[in-house]
Length: 471
Figure 1: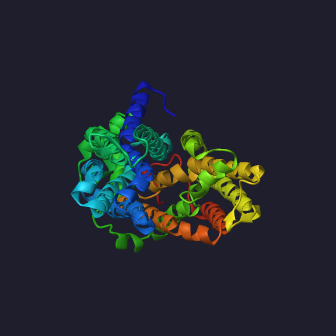
Figure 2: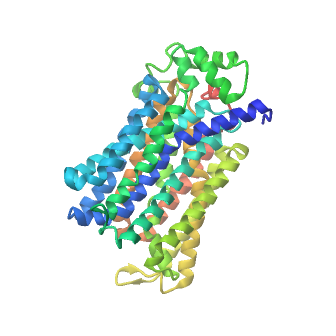
Figure 3: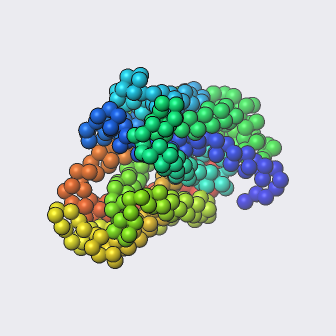
């Protein structure tokens, strides 16, 4: 890796840009945890049943699907930076108005706020990996894109901390805290923290040099490339970008055109990787996390300590992924991490398989050894997922597509991720009601399939220039 002073300055600048655009994914994690802490009080506030509370949770993902499906293609038309700038008002809308939904339209207005916010973070989490890929030097591109997953985890943690403090200060999330607002409303208002940081810092980023070349703005692209690469002469790089765009550039690469092109199989592989990321059960395995901790002596009052433990394993995992991905490679990390994932799922599934059933419920608490094994499986799953399939999906999504289809293809892959996420969250309670052991065995099988598929079909992108992708 280059170690000249100009290269170091360029790497620092590229790192700064990557950190700024990950504020969108940070909001995504923050918003999801805010609702997790507020949902019980929201249900009481609006007198909601289980289905209505489920809808309140799902609307954010629905908004994310909408944002993901349109953002990539839109970024080809008006620019990566412009789309990321437009996200700010969507995030501010939910942050400001969601807290006042009881007085502005009630439950349905809250759903609107969640959809609008979801559109914002869906667009941000779709465009951010591609933007970082297009501005980052190849030597550190993987770790910079992986900041997306770390940002989501930190968003979850900070929001969880705020939920705990606000709820503790008020007595519960349903009690009034200050200025006539209940604790859950203050939780929503805290969304202003990431939303404001995002809106203030996003104007500081430049437009993607690949987009600038696609619009014939070679001089502007040269200035950006010089700053993010540390190279003085970037004419050859610009020529390579122009050649990679072809005669039509990105202007006519609709989803239908992409699926009719020579890159169809490449996009299908990306969509399959996106689906496998969710089908390993990352949003389902935590359903029983409280039960597992209770089985080894943790009380309900110790929920915050549980959050700290889980977050610690997540941070260790994603940090390992960031440090290793540019050395080991994307494909190898997915295979190794995926192997740890399905082995961990097999351990958790085995605990539920052999645990006794009392009064129709799986009883892990009666056998502390089963509880420790289940928590060990949960923590190993976290290490495996957050070091591989969590961040590296974003990396391959941002890297693996040729320049002329990147925006549209990112929408298709990210849209798949959100859609499968929605289905997993929607179906998980029904699967668990059928059989907890069977549910985790299903996830384990998907983990095995994910590793086999990756080993056979995914092409390594480590160290390659974006202009060489798809060849």
